[in-house]
Amino acid sequence: MKLILLGPPGAGKGTQAEALARRKGLIQLSTGDMLRAAVKAGTEIGQKAEAVMKSGGLVSDEIVIGIIAERIGQPDCANGFILDGFPRTLKQAEALDQLLISRHTGLDQVIELKVDDTALLSRIENRARETVAAGGTVRADDNAEALKTRLWAYYRETAPLIGYYFAQGKLRQVDGMASISEVAQQIDALLEGGEKMSQN
Ligand SMILES: Nc1ncnc2c1ncn2[C@@H]1O[C@H](COP(=O)(O)OP(=O)(O)O)[C@@H](O)[C@H]1O
Image (cartoon, rainbow, N blue to C red):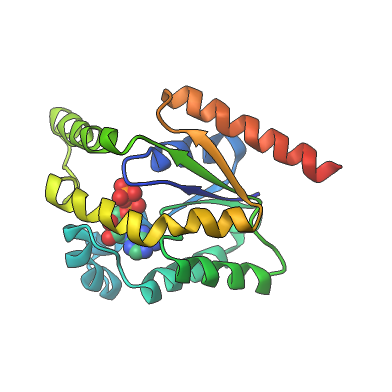
């Protein structure tokens, strides 16, 4: 199964992708996590990405497409994966389609987590507060200014993907404002429906 979780920053993609990957035995591919690891390791990609990530802007298509192309070619991805944070631009979506076509496969479903815009800021502020309370390190881009840039990038660059996948008949939507477990149940219901459809 090859899935995309789509939604604005703070929508809960990471939380749901991780839990879903565990439930279904799929690989979670988060470009945000991969880029943060590259920054931490000080690789060439990390050095290129660090400043733009910190400001809340988007890393270049070339870099993220390269990372994903390399990763989905690895054997552990053969059974399926959940993309979280990729694609984020139409160019990335088209590159992904081409990559999958060249592997004689394609996406099963794109699940959009629909959330109330005004709830996002407080969610991210809470995430930063809880992390500090737990003694952890807050992400460099979890502050009001970078969040505004991330939201802006989402609406300008990523939201058009909703139309792109709707036109492909792949788009499904869940209510991202529901509790974590309710969202997970909605996703499971969609996936069960999809499996039944593909058996017919
Ligand atoms: N597919 C991508 N294209 C461009 N930049 C990306 C991509 N994925 C992650 N990034 C960079 O990493 C940052 C953090 O990504 P992520 O962890 O997915 O955050 P969010 O909580 O905003 O969904 C983004 O703001 C962006 O700078």
